[in-house]
Length: 218
Ligand SMILES: C[S@@+](CC[C@H](N)C(=O)[O-])C[C@H]1O[C@@H](n2cnc3c(N)ncnc32)[C@H](O)[C@@H]1O
Image 1 (cartoon, rainbow, N blue to C red):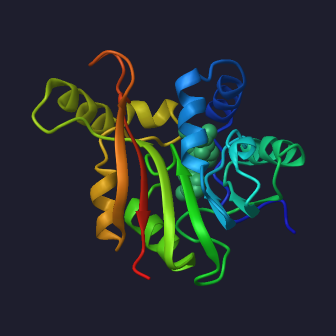
Image 2 (cartoon, protein in one colour; image 1 turned 135 degrees about the vertical axis):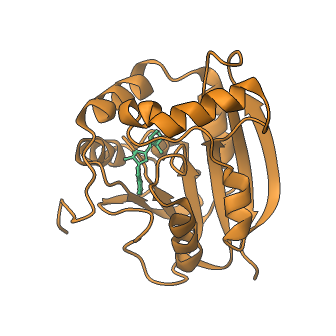
Image 3 (spheres, protein in one colour; image 1 turned 30 degrees about the vertical axis):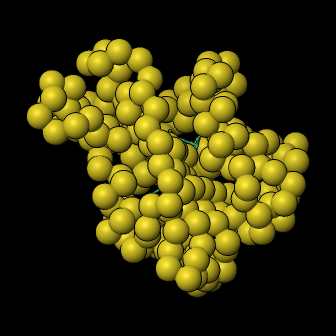
């Protein structure tokens, strides 16, 4: 399989900083979220935007195969290394969420962790995820989202997104997306969802995180 793709998106500084942070700085709470995100999965899973492969070790043995898509070349190389040590079979492939290199209805579940903030076209990515999921398939997500409208924190987020300042240092990350609404608009029903709040308001622009399971109609 080709090691590159016309969809490659290089963010060399962000990629190295993210990979290092995932080795050295991952808080215990994030490890718990990653466990919860993967718990109960089985069959074939697509992990969209797998980064350096930090989630691989959290998949339970009932998962037969993970197809991990990553457009950033440095992160993809790190993910390939992580795949070699994963407790389940993981294939790392180039690609982007908006054009997944997978057949229609070919996977049982999709996993997005801190990715739907960064995809350039969130609606297209979610439509594409729905395409590759089998009927009744699950989307597991752990994503930071917009603060409530009208709050000072939200105004600060809107400013960061409008200036592009956060995206410039964060590999294209947007801080004020209403990801749960976008998931519903793409045809999913949210089965369960909980909100985790990390850090103090204003100081941390990516404070509100959603951990959820959404499902396509059977
Ligand atoms: C903050 S990192 C999270 C990585 C990993 N999911 C994790 O939880 O550690 C965001 C990831 O989204 C990826 N990404 C950005 N745009 C993407 C796209 N259009 N399709 C798929 N992945 C994308 C980046 O390359 C990066 O790996």
